[in-house]
Image (cartoon, rainbow, N blue to C red):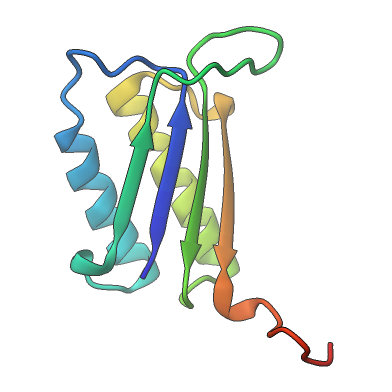
Length: 113
């Protein structure tokens, strides 16, 4: 069950976000290999963000998934989400930081490493 969380300084007042939700949900499902009905997307706008010393459009994102994350999947997720943010909200990919977590790869509490 992948969950994508995006925080940005872009103001979404008057912006149609449904196309982004639809496209990013389909893309994540395809890349991670999960059904679309198990993909969650959270998009939070109008957050104060300074990146590179200025307040130009920027975003921070993370995706958490229970399995399905490989090095290639990480690359594909970063490229695809970055491209969609640029297309829909004019956030240049160089102003987007993205973390990818596979919670299945985390050690269990009290487990030996």
